[in-house]
Length: 182
Image 1 (cartoon, rainbow, N blue to C red):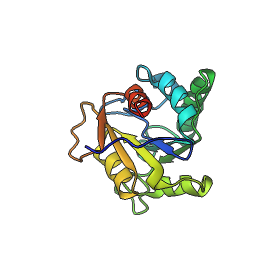
Image 2 (cartoon, one colour; image 1 turned 180 degrees about the horizontal axis):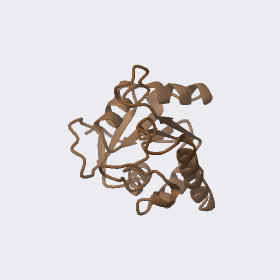
Image 3 (cartoon, rainbow, N blue to C red; image 1 turned 90 degrees about the vertical axis):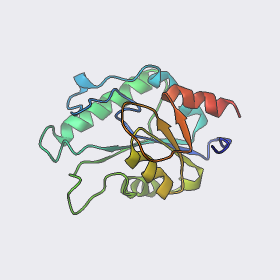
């Protein structure tokens, strides 16, 4: 395992949503804000990480919209709720990018495709993928980060992950320990 890099405001933190920020609905989707539930310690971790990283970006695959299970306006409401709850605690998310099409769609912007990260870089040109960390809980998250030259961190879960991440943690709060060890 590689040594954890020294982090400052020039670094960007990319986060998956389901299974990293909120409780994942295995076999289903978070379709309404009432179903959104932060994982333990996440709001506090994001608040602390907001002070350390220059940017925090969420990249999330949400094909439930293309399946007709919920609408883009439902997704926007969930994200407004998430951002509001984090802001109430002093945390912030700088950008949220969602890929809402099916895996099988011709125009596939879903992770592991780099589309969402490239869109984030258009919005925030200072993002340097070599000074970025991707935290996720699936193979597609790890491949997404690795293909862009990011450091990768896997949050261990029930998900069967084959890809090797640079680091493994049990929750976002453990990222704080890694960052603070420097």
